[in-house]
Picture 1 (cartoon, rainbow, N blue to C red):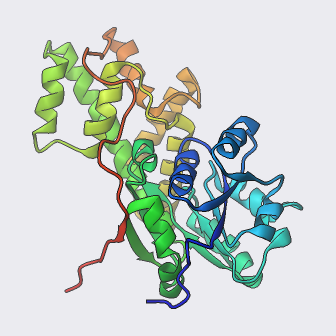
Picture 2 (cartoon, rainbow, N blue to C red):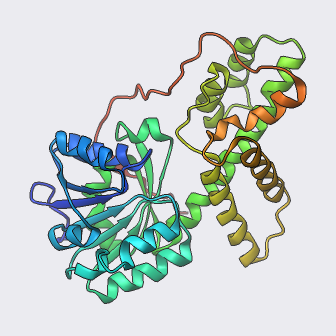
Length: 328
């Protein structure tokens, strides 16, 4: 174990980005007594955290000047770059020994570039995107991938196990981001398959509540079905994830495949499907409303009574742990 492991009782953490995912991750830190300072462009989000005991920072540079760890959770690689590199950005006031934890879903090349700037300023960088849905981010039960050297991973592990339930060290900086966009590709493929299966069952006259249970106990079950199918059938489609973010993630996955020479067949079609949905219904529409393309084409409303309008994680919160990779 690294003797420089972070002491959470004396740690000052800065958090930039209080959106759908970031706000819930920051809430886990605050709920567990971490000394937290926050920054977001939305003053109302900042005010809410201040009312619950967090401090606010006027600029990212102010966070860097006063915090031991800086966490960013932002909607795009460009946003993260701006937060670090602007005149009042994090790097303008970076202190040696500070750790940057990038929890956004981002481009591995960009995280590597920014991580080199952090290292040149005397800091360390970790890309640690999350997976499992906003409802699990809210309870500290989400999964976290962490890409960095082993010593830095062990240093930040106590903080990661407050933020998430299952923590996987994926290798060097950038590796977690590559794995994360692969998992989001899989989730998107599952979502499109679920929308087609549900719509076809509705058109065939099969009760949709029965359909949900049949899929759930079958070999066709998936995490996406157990969660997002409920939001689809309720009609709210509120999964706290929007079409533009889907397009960003599967676009990043396509870039990885192109770079390593893998001739993908499904992903280009998925990109076309979501581009069409975003053009029809808006880039900020909930991603589950991709099913509206099929509802519009068939005239069928794929909804059923008895399903919740939001997802709630009913698994008790507990301290997370590292997932140890099995080796032969």
